[in-house]
Length: 217
Image 1: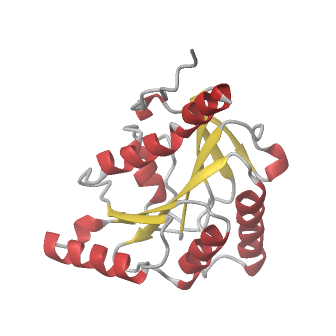
Image 2: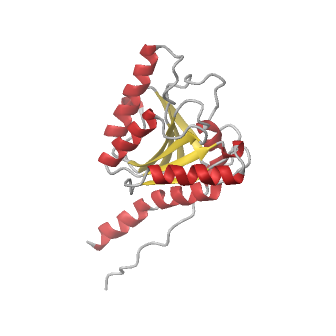
């Protein structure tokens, strides 16, 4: 008799994440297999700090003092089949137009061509959410049925009431986007890490579920 039971979802240990490589182009990225979850956001949205907090490591992702300096895709391995990806920050007006275009092209090629991409962690400063470039990414993801989980970073800048109000307002603005979820987050105060872990666990468990379903066919 065929066992129809799906695997018990795993809670992954994100402190075991290790750096693999940096890549300036998609051709130099790791093989397009397994599952990837990518972190993306405007420059100075706190992306590196969030990655470090989520993995409980001080310097896994190196935060630059100059927004817009990181222009590579950085790949980190959770296990043989699962990776986190730190994508270049976008939207920093003070970098040369040529460099902005290179970053936009790199993001476009990764998001449109990377088949193993399971979801996007989209980071936004809670004080400036849903800027035009953020909406562009959300619209692209919606059109391609790519799940998005938004971290409203630097929530420690607000008191609790104001932070919750910003969260509710963002959720209202996203009504009609069923594949987009939102939470507040503070790397400084380590707020929202468990919720972020739960979303990552959900996405990274999909490979085990897919494998089980394939074996049942």
